[in-house]
Length: 149
Length: 149
DNA sequence: CTACCTGCAAAACGTTTGCAAGACG
DNA sequence: CGTCTTGCAAACGTTTTGCAGGTAG
Image (cartoon, rainbow over the protein chains, first blue to last red):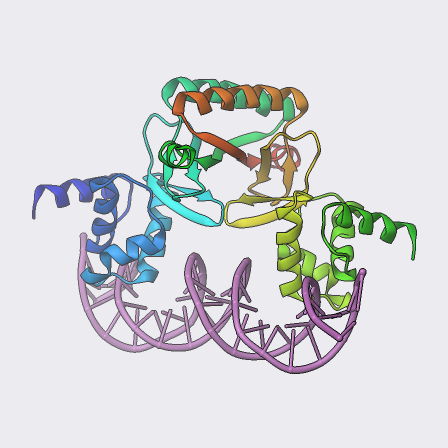
């Protein structure tokens, strides 16, 4: 049993999730390359290892429930990615209309401003905010410059 | 031909959309009760009048394309509602975890602040923002007080 | 050994499409 | 009358579910 497996097993068990090799593989994927994955993508990358689509969905739900990964909906698509420790329930993503790439886009300064803003909103509307999901659509850096030039 | 029909016909034609009674019915729904509708909901409310689900989807897409209504995705659900003239491409919605109700939640003051924030972000990340969709999840006013008390 | 987890296949959704019939101007 | 629009049913992609067999502890 190698180092990576050990590490992944520990994360799962620390969250009260019994280890199985399928769960290990899925979580490893998110750790190895920390980007946004659609369920289908996870399935495509791991089906060679004999992981079924149902297990992918069930595992993503488990990992999300316990806060290891987060679910992001951008338009009609659903993505998952690792939860970053510094993010305080406010997630902002930029989705490029042209190339379809998805970018995270809150540095800690912006996150703080945002957080203050939503605190105010929470009070003024007398509700309890659990999380905020901001999806920005437009042209990303690359596509903007391609179109312009 | 009554007043309501005339009015709806005018809106459609002003946007370059040929009038049909199905389009009229769908748009009337949004005008009569200006709330958030899922495609399915629109279909359920209008199928008695012989409107098919395909027509609902096609019409919603047409109305969205020309800016009469907007599309909002909240979690895995897609909603449509009338576009408000004052909204400047920034849409914020509150979705209650418990009762599932959806609320608009940017008054003009908050919208201005938000707008400034995203202008800054746009510059600092060198991208072009077309629209911003903010989904806030949590407990709404009513459900919060029910749970608490 | 028991409880839980898995893959498969089928079902359940939401959404889109092709097509023949019908409505619009 | 030609064009565009419609309803239907089928197709499609995504997500969920039931179940028999397998795995973990």
